[in-house]
Length: 168
Image (cartoon, rainbow, N blue to C red; front, top):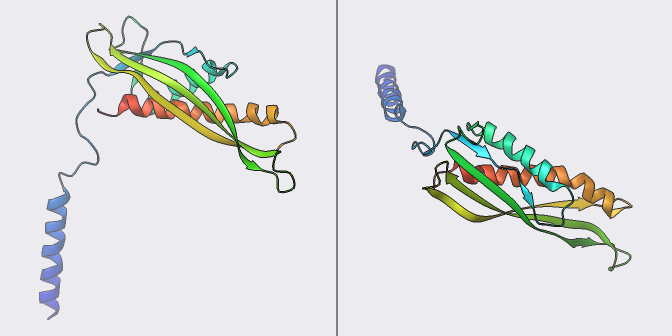
């Protein structure tokens, strides 16, 4: 009986290993470009000096996604990002005064365009991407908003990089 169980386990393990040998996680197709030029981020929103933070976080996220960042003349693709709208809404009010906000949702909207370096192929144009973070109770909303900006920039940069590195 033990030998029969051992044979069964051995065959099961062999079938499992051979069945999973060629499995690859995710999409195995390659991107049509290996490098990208990230144009300076334009800021048409009311988020003060957000373009530098978003640009830095976007570059970091693209490098983490396996793309090479190249100068304009040598890159295979060009990414242009424009920050379009910045908004904040009270998401939590004080328990003692419903007019006073204890937390705000801060959202930054952007449009991204990705084209081939020769301009013949448009991978996506004016793609809407947004990120939201929540700021919590400090005495000054300005201070909380200032502290939230790096988190907002990182989230927006990651979302844009995901759109660039995902096959469409």
